[in-house]
Image (cartoon, rainbow, N blue to C red):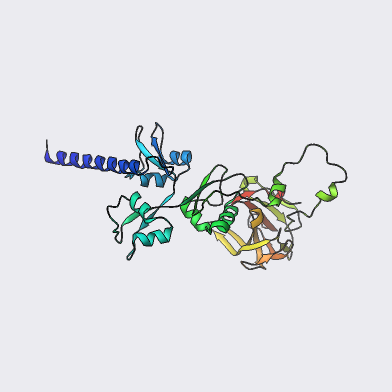
Amino acid sequence: MPKGVDQEGKIYRVTIFMSVLAAAFFLISFPQSSSARNYIVRKGDYLVKLEKRFGVPWQDIKKVNALAGTTIYPGQKLIIPELAVRSYVVRKGDSLIDLEKRFGVPWREIKKINALAGTTIYPGQKLIIPLQGVWHVVKERQWLLLIVRTYGKAYGVSKEEIIEANRLKDPDNLVPGQKLFIPRAKRALEIKIPPQILTRDVTPSTSPAPREKPKVEKKQPLFEWPLKGEVIGYFGEEGNQGIDIAGSSGETVVAAADGKVSYTGHLIVPGKNYGYTVFINHEEEGLLTCYFYNAGNLVEKGQKVKKGDPIAKLGIMEDSGRFGLHFEIRKMSKPVNPLDYLP
C-alpha cells in the first residue's frame, strides 16, 4: 500500500477513535442524568431540526458531541443536552475556581464536561461552560420584556443574558411553545399578562350586551389619532406597513398613546428618506408607534409623553408629495394594522 494512503488511513482511524472516545465520555458522564438524553439520528434529521424537536440550540448539540462540522447521519448516536452551554476562551489569570464564581457553576462540572485531566487551564484554551437554570416555555401573549421582568425580579437575570443563552436572533419575535433557557433560575415562573392586553385580546361575545353596560364599556380608548385627517393609504396596500393620513402645513402630530420616546431623528435608509421620525415605546402593551415624514420633531429620546402630547410638526410624505403622516404600529417588532387600535 502506498505510504501516503496508509498515512491517510491512520489519520481517519484516529479521528473516528477520538470521536467515539468523546461520545463515550459524555455517555459515562450523563448515564442517568436529567441533564442529557441519548438520541439515535434518523433519516432526514439535521441539527436545526433537532433544535426544534428538543428545544436545545443546535450549537450546543454540536459542542457536546464534539462534531467537527454540521453533518449528521442516520444511526449516529448523539447526546442531547438539557442544560444550556456557552463557549469561553480562558484568559490570563483564570482558574476553575474563578470560572465557578463568574458563571455560578461548580468547577467540578466545568472540569467534567471539558474532560480535563487535572485542574490546570491555560490562556487561549476553549472551554464549554454549562449554565445553571431552568427552561421556560413561552405561552400566548408573552413577550421578552415580560419574561425578563418576571425572572429578573426573582433571580436578577438580565435581558442580555437570556438573549445570549438562547442565541436569539429576533428577541422580539417569540412564538408559543418556544423554550427559553433562563440562567440561574431555580424554577419556572408564571408570567402575568397586563390586564389591558387580556381585555383587548378577548373576542367579543356574540350575544347582545345589556343596555345598561355601554357607559362602562365606553372607556377612554388606549389610542387616539395622531393626526386628524383623511386616510389616503391603507395597511397592506402595495406593501404599506401602516396608514397614511393627509394633513395641512403647520399641523401638529401628537402621541397616539402614553409611552417613552425610543427614537427621534432624521431617518434615512438605503433608497428611502423618511424625514424626521419619532418612535414611541408602549412597554405595558408590548407596542411601538412610529411617526414618519415629519418636518421637525418636538421630543427627545428617553422623554416620557402622554397621549395627545405634541411630538412633531407635519411634513411632506415622500411617496405622495402631500402634507401628511405615515403612521405605523408594531407589535413585537411586526407591523399591525393601526385601524385595529385607533378609535
